Image 1 (tube, rainbow, N blue to C red):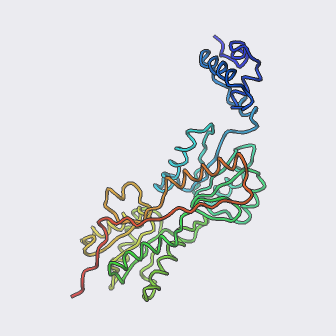
Image 2: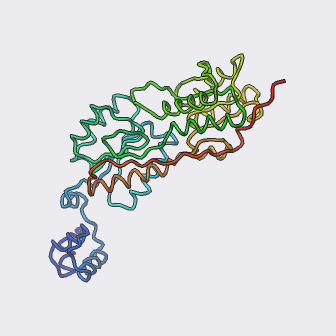
Length: 338
């Protein structure tokens, strides 16, 4: 039995093929009674439109691309969940490009953004260089940034400087004066900005409190629990070790907790630990952290992109989501020295 065609639907409904096409494309030019007849015919015949033909008729690819670094990381997964949640109710398909090297990042920036490939592009956490911006603009595809900021594009961001300051201030308010800072490597071909801004917030909070920056209290390494474990061991083996540690994401904070356990330190009696992101496991571990709206940032990013696909704005839009201190059981006042 041959598949049902658009002509079969038109015959069944007693209308022209063009009318069926307009109904499929949700055109307002079709009368409600005619629309109902066509929709009834589509249901009766179990008609499924040819996706390629539909794309051609609309002059669109009906595809949205996301370029994201290390998309198995919990924070990226949450942002992708937000994107998928919104796009599931649209007619668009989603393609995710995973970036794990600088070379792949450059290749995706160069090739993915062309209008004949996708109708819109979301870039997560990867700051475009000026040469990238020019190439992306030449591609003609609407672009929305999530977790990074550039004046050329609309964006959904978090004030990471404020978040870093919040985390450090929480420890200061508890009475800590010796506060360590632990993060991923700052220098990277990916041009990440979050750790840089969180460190700036850390420094500002300490300086505002009249405390000097201690270089030995700031360590950087690979994004992993095992790397965080090693970094934390370096801090905790200092002759004058920190009494509190701010880790710039919850994954690193978990590594700090493991290092404290290895050294027989009680958290939070002997060591306070605060993370960043508030991923799902943070609540299970009762980790104090800075919550950023990961799911919401992805959802807002795709909503913004869908709007711009329909009508490009005169100027880029910026949406800034709040950060929130979530106090749990891994932070407390430091023990008094005897």
